[in-house]
Length: 334
Image (cartoon, rainbow, N blue to C red; front, top):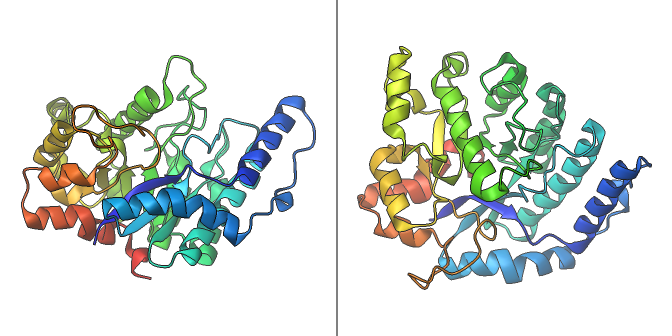
């Protein structure tokens, strides 16, 4: 079985996008925002968004199960206040939860949290609990920078985040560390902002005692870990100089990387450097890079091909494709 742990719903129904446009306009104009209850999306409309796009691509690439979350750049935590974020997140999460019910066995839901700049993450707990307990969601995306590219939130290792971690451990669900759209013109959102945030998160985590406090907390760093595999020696040296253990011991059962790297050499390096027990298969289809690589004739985000050609054993390949995700996302068993 092949489990893709990182896919965003980038072919959303028009009614959802229209609502968001009206909501953002209301924020800018200082008027009453639209009511999420005004959005009506039928099952047929939802199938029409999934079948010719997400599901078709999964079938073509031999992906059995996809963990589907709202569009990352669309989370837009920097827009409006907490109530705006809450209304938008609940609407997106409700929609995500409908997909596995329409396509049993092919999708599992991952939710976004109603984060907002300067607002305690503790206020996100009710929505996280609702998604897991009521909507059968198996994980969440956690934004380390709700400001949208200005990095003014406390580090992920700060007690500010502890209430969310406590709830994640209680519910036994992991979080993918994932920023949203960049409103900083110096940071291209998928090319720079995402990779910067991934790298930043890793350095914060390895220099902390977070996993001593939360030994069962599981965090996924997407996009192959950002710059981490390429600079493994740098971060290993920094950790050792700071009196920390070897990186392999630090990441243990707590930090995981996905395979959204998009070239063979990058995957080969990732699987050589990062323990394969800490690598989860992912493609981020249909999203960050949608084109065909002229050097190979295949889509950049057809990441299954890279794993099949990586210099690893069949047992390691099976772990990356399936077994590791089953450990990290135990609610998949349901």
